[in-house]
Image (tube, rainbow, N blue to C red; front, side, top):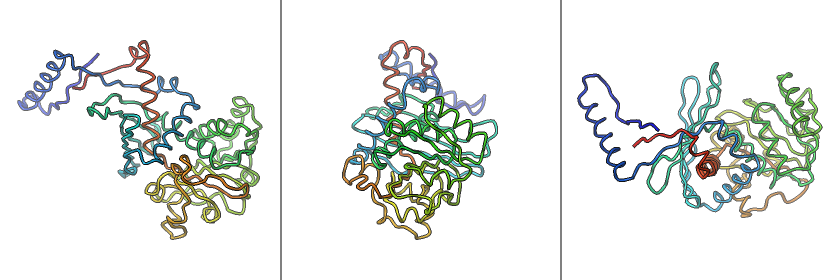
Length: 365
């Protein structure tokens, strides 16, 4: 077990740096003598992947939306830092009912070559002391909790008899969306795919057949993919609409997942005008969600948004009310999703002595 000093040595002859380091070490030694040491666990993706199933994520995210809907969280909107080649998003939350708090930091750098486009870390904080309990990989958690949110939205907003799902975009997030959807809408038997990358689309179709045992077909246009679908899931990075209103039949539910920054949009704004639109958070969605362009152009207003997902999960507002209505879930991602999932994973791992012993830890203080 290692101890990291927080003092920064700025020069070999810097007496102040040496003094600061000695002071930090004195505090640490004093805490040890009093039996006050506590470790911060460093938890990587490999351990996290084996700790929680998609069913676990779906259950956790639904409960998180319920807490959010009851107003039982402190959660400022997502904050952005914009760089020349990407951005950094900071997402803090305090969840009293779970006695947990934390911050997720996640970047989006599309031009990365040797690094992933999206990378995330999560820091869990003990609300009673402010101590950092864990620093965790957040990339896998982000992927899974986003998929789970789509599954929860479909549970409330899609028709219970939905059988055909269309996926526009066949990347990593599409896989998570489908996995969660099949938990909350197990009657789905057919998947229709569209992606500009033919090889990716065909590989995804093979995976769907082998992993889920479903009928999977590849369409040669977005129109053909979505026109007969009961549920449409979009996970692209486009900045102009690719799903047209005329292609969406009455009774369709849409999970709009891809828009996550200002200027991005996947849906024809006419769809939003026809639909019962449910968002996760107004500040985030109007800034960077599917509705952001339509709001900026004055095509829709806050009054036209039907509800947020917390209001739906707590039944403050009815979910789907008729078989004919079109519903849209605009997902931007909430900090409560990340921190609730990370907390449950952390507690599960630490409660097992053998697993706990295998996780790296540091004494920062």
